[in-house]
Length: 452
Image (cartoon, rainbow, N blue to C red):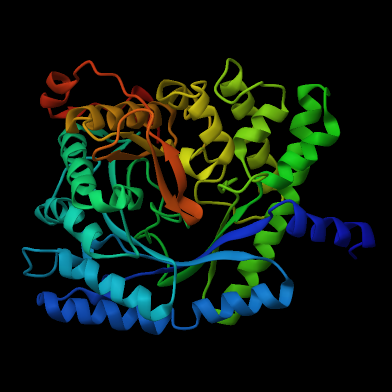
């Protein structure tokens, strides 16, 4: 039985502390849409998505209204498109992206993810066609998100794919230069990508998943920040316990919404991703949580240790609240989407090198970072390689989502609006990595990849 205090506490979390369900994402398998005729395959894709997800937005809005819990996004993820398109005779895969975009518009969702390829050990002809189509696909669509997995702990790093993705990111930025390289905000390069991630831009519906599934991503940096204000000056074990208890409460809300959406949509409940996903709103920042632990500014010495505590405590609290925790689950540090990160980057305390160190202990990686427009494709590839190596060696998911904005230099900023926020252009090392990237081949997997 809920007590009055617990009910009032939950209301305060929603009304004053920015607690929300960041996304209800329906995963849909498109393997049944494979067809030798590309036009027929695109028709099947559109029909299946619109049939399966026709009620997704309406059900999300009904739950939001009835329970009083904000649900910010309703999204769709699909089978990696390189696998579906491979059965067709198409040389150009852009029509598959257009079919996804049409279906997403018809369903009324915010984004659709899964214009993806898994190339961590090698590339098929279909994989390469999809990768080379990404710049045009993201230029010509509004709701489609793309992702590419270039490495894993078991396989090592596919450096040919890493080099190609450096060029793909660069080309995508040029094709969407009139929108401050917005296409790059919808493109993420992974190591150890997971099959049940509900968050964009990296969501796809893995081949090990059911025909359809409901995954929910929660958010609550503001709730954690508020909770820590009650333990100022307390030892770190007290801080950890406070974060764990708060993460438990946040995850229980996600579990409730996921189960209700699953029931109403007659779709199996997959996972709750309990990641702390910030927004540009004041009071909804992961950086401010770290500063509440005693750092003057996020990025100064001690930031990595504080983030390690936060990430671990969030997972420990969340896993007690649901038997179906999955996805990425931890703390996100997307610069443009976090008011505190933006401030720290503007002050110079937060650099790309420090962010890279922080990704060793948090969810995902170098996320939503604007860099100078003249940054070379080889430098972008080297940034991807560094981040993928962290994921490979540490057996964790890491990713890169950088925006080399044409015409912008350090000191400039870009404005994307909404949850994507704004970002200062951050400096990168000017020394060349071109000869390193030109080697190609594969960086072998670490020794612990041999565990069975």
